[in-house]
Image (cartoon, rainbow, N blue to C red; front, side, top):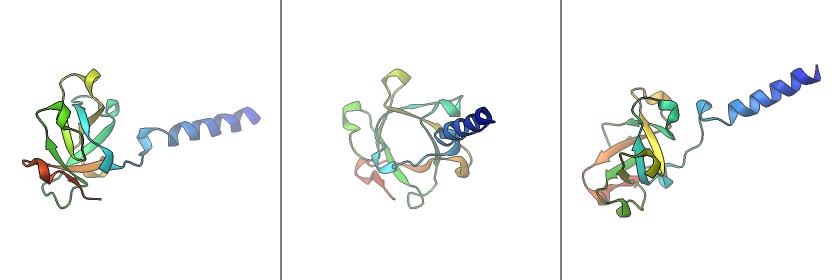
Length: 115
């Protein structure tokens, strides 16, 4: 009986500490070099949904062309190599399963956190 209870406790701790059940994401601290996962959403650090409007997005993102310039909130440099990325994203079609929502802007000074 004790083994069964111990197994249940360990299982609960593992489940609630994983990304599968969600995690608190401070989107204001998500910036830098990013890799976009195309096939496996569970291999990504974050699952994101792309909004049509910047006002309803959690984070307004500008795609930097220089890795060194992606040093503030909302500034992302996309790399083709996962090993060089600070974090990875997977773009989802359903907003309800996303960790946070983003909107891509064309102007770098408009990159900001809306939370």
